[in-house]
Length: 323
Image 1: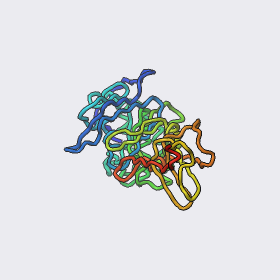
Image 2 (image 1 turned 45 degrees about the vertical axis):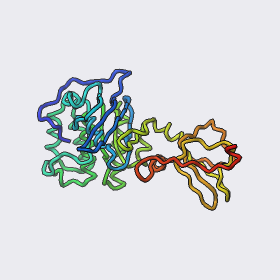
Image 3 (image 1 turned 60 degrees about the vertical axis):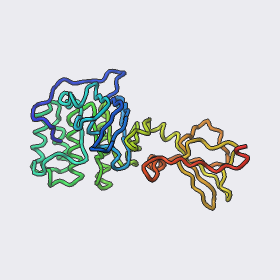
Image 4 (image 1 turned 90 degrees about the vertical axis):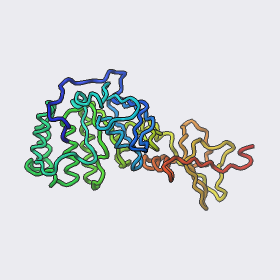
């Protein structure tokens, strides 16, 4: 990545206090022309977290990322990164914050070695030797021009440059989009290695729910410009279940309704299936029910219906159930 400023960045490092989140967003609103992209977003990311920001295309994930980085102004609200305002204090923050955007802002004609040298001169914390060693492992010559690298090589290079800056916070905007499965695995392997050796905080947007599930500690879901889900990944997975009742009648097999909210109901000749977001281990569910866990991808699908909004489907109850 090429920092915006051509002057060396400030050297004073900023560390969050024990009770201060690395990222704090309150009431964030951002409009583009007459369209409201973000509406009252509240977000807190604690030190050491890996926060996955999910959402369908066009819901504002990249806009939020750029507001956090001070690359876009916002119309209303308060944003603090390591206690500082990224729009007013971006130069000071960039010593402790690194990022890799969906589209790298690197001239295609720039040699790789020149890119590393530029980052070394701008950031005293930049580990050029370590970055060069990685390039040799990947068999990427420093003389090669950035535009001649494959998409996967460009992504890994930008990620490695960001990690070599030794940041406290790393923001990644859809880092694996357009990559083949092997390249995606290599990118996430680099992230896992970095997390194992540092107290790094990461916020990343992604559509790769399978990989995110093994990496994230927390999950946020943007819908219609608002954060409709914001919780630890394990807590989210714990409250979602698929409930299945076999039999030709397809009725809920209990005198009390199923745990709410119900996001989907499917009926067929073999019985009925419900997706609930209100499961708890201490619920007294009918023993005839089959209860299955859901993957993050299945939860993401359950939370979306045509029109980009959750759809609550109420199950069918018999007269005895509602008496």
